[in-house]
Length: 367
Length: 100
Figure 1 (tube, rainbow over the protein chains, first blue to last red):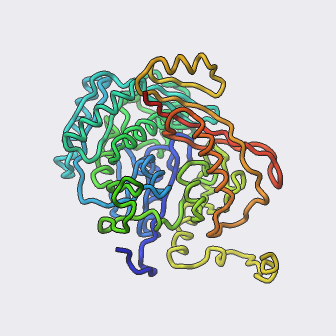
Figure 2 (cartoon, rainbow over the protein chains, first blue to last red):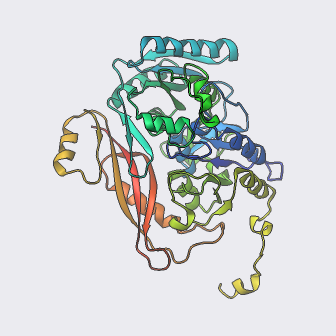
Figure 3 (cartoon, rainbow over the protein chains, first blue to last red):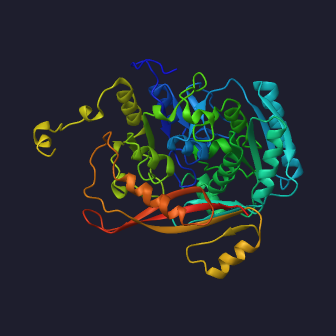
């Protein structure tokens, strides 16, 4: 059912902070979370992806924030999927056979802790038949990338977990220990790109696309030596032995992905599960001003939805609205972006909030 | 190795070698996609679709010409002359999923 439009009605907003491009806000360890919380308060309904929400052992649960992996977020922006909130999920745990035994045990203990302390439904647990073989790379843009040597192993294990009753999957893969030390030091010092993030996105996109259920990824890494100059934005990753708690919490209430395209029966029907968020209801997308070349933003722009470009979140890219020919609502910060979201929700034209305000007289002649 | 990291400069023989390994493969590529000219840079958002309609169309058309399903993609740079009539192109970074 579509609620009556009013100023108290939530306005669904997409928040995109692409991973692996060195965003000053959200490019580290869940440090986009304060911005997400603010935008959720302004909109009443925020749809965002794990890179924004995942702070390793730190997380924030808010019923107004919907945790949607990047592949599904793109499909939602394209109008291919609706999102249906759930009370609880059965989160299957998929472990890479390449994880060291002690580190593997740490991950199982985290899963047990989330069951005992938070009441999450975690399990079953499945280990792949052979190591997945994560490979890392860096593109000419400076963005991190990567993939898997054995993607078929990942897909098979995911299928088995789904058949065993999992309605969401947390995947943990072993990452190479021989990472670029200079790059790692820059990241921990708050001046670098997350070298693992690109590969993480590929892994979760691959699994999510194949299974059609919520999936998210946590890397398994050996502990790092103490770093005195650790940047606060990277600090959440050094609190514990794993990055898994935030993923389990996020997935535990991640919305159902409801197909809207044929052969789905919903393709020809207006009937959706109660409380579902239809892509037709998206009110705007918020993204860093230099990272507007991703699928979700371009899909929204194509539909004529407002693109709020946050100039205060620099990254290694310079793909701006001007470069692409996209009209944007510029925002100096996420605080200003939240103000624009509130204006849209209240039905206030954002152009009315800035000066000079051009007269309609001249524009009328152009029609 | 089923995971193959290829660039736009990869040769035909490299591509054939990649195909020969079978199984599901992930292929990373960088493509340059010609973009339609921008008549005039838009100053403010409106409800009307902007020229991103054609940017998206150009990107999707380029992806359609590639082997495999685009799993993750983004425009990571735009170069060329700005303004009316300028020839512009976008660098597209994409990871393709190729199933046997």
